[in-house]
Image 1: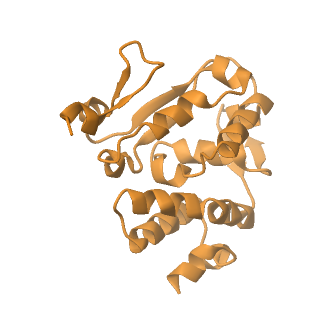
Image 2 (image 1 turned 45 degrees about the vertical axis):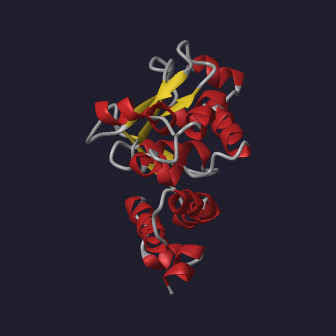
Image 3 (image 1 turned 180 degrees about the vertical axis):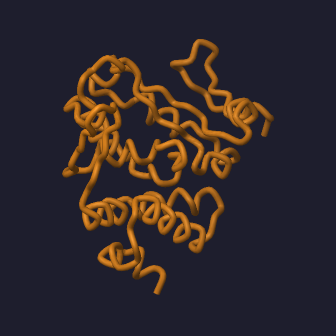
Length: 199
């Protein structure tokens, strides 16, 4: 197999026909790889570009994409509502999940807030709090709903981990890290399958 076939993936939408994953990793050795969703794609309700990008990751590169993708949405900077409140944004992520994009917990960066944004865009209930004399916004959510959100996407995440060559212990470690990131304790997420897999 040629080096190009090992480290690149054919992309008919790209002018040169290839997504160069090797250089994406090289250009971002210690940080997250940004993926920008355009407002046009959101308003069309078309998650093809995101799904295509994920689907084209060569298996050789897959282990290096763990916790590495920062998903951002462009074009709403002047919008008065938060991005996760917009119906068209929520519909976009719903469409992505309908088309099989359920392994956010494998790819999305925790430290940059990427996974938090995806969570809020797909969570059914949350409460937004504004603070006087500051642009800061607080968001709270039901911990049991977050635990169920994690459990509902556990199989897809685990499958990607295993495909990338990780172990069941690695899967559990990541799921527990995500749960803790969102402020869940073992008592909060025992309703899901994470607790059962640890037992």
